Amino acid sequence: MENEHLSKSTIFPLGEKVIVNFTGDAYLQMVFTDPAPLNTAIGNVTFAPGARNNWHAHRAGQVLLVTGGKGWYQEEDKPARLLQTGDVINIPPNVKHWHGATKDSWFVHLAMTPGDTEWFEAVEDKWFDQL
Image 1 (cartoon, helix red, strand yellow):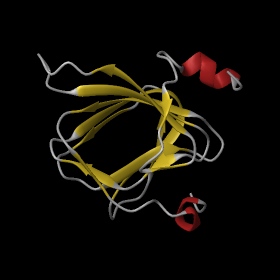
Image 2 (tube, rainbow, N blue to C red):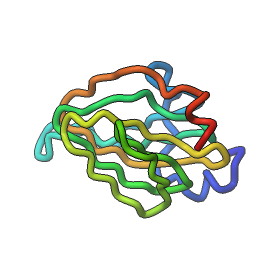
Image 3 (cartoon, helix red, strand yellow):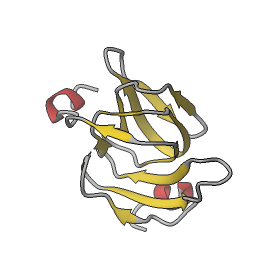
Image 4 (cartoon, rainbow, N blue to C red):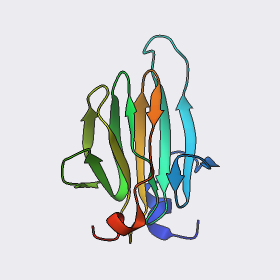
């Protein structure tokens, strides 16, 4: 891969480029989709520097397991939180939030997502550039 740090932090293949509901270059490799016994999908999401997803919420919540790089996580009306390798984020049901890479680092996490996702507006560049 073009970035040595990324190749050292990626456990699963890079996957397919995500086209909708993301800003910048992001990739998704589904690693678990069988509904039994956990009833959750697990995706490996890789964000290039500055890439992020739109604001969104999960009906049943979500768990993020950070496996590489540095990124941001923010819930609506709360300050953004810096994430690093080894961090675990437990997102309650129906909490509007976003996550993505810092401006200067790749960011990789496993996302455990049971149920549906509701997508909202993009995280604006003007706001993101202030982080």
